[in-house]
Image (cartoon, rainbow, N blue to C red):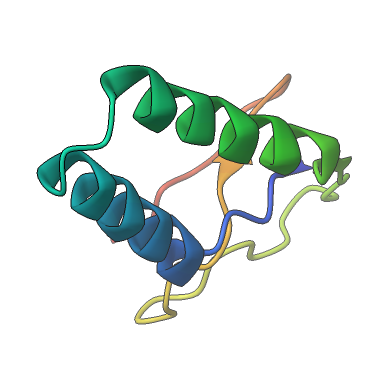
Length: 79
């Protein structure tokens, strides 16, 4: 699995800042530039992470702080 380390608080803050810029009359191009810069920064911080079989990745009631993409294999979602 890949762990992209996207912090929900950072994403919310970036979104709020971008919306403020748009509301305050910032050019759409400026908003797009900031979004692209933020995404590029996050991509550079990505790291691959291997999780062996039968290991709990996210526990129930755990606050989400990471974003996972399953590249190969399978997973069980337990509710």
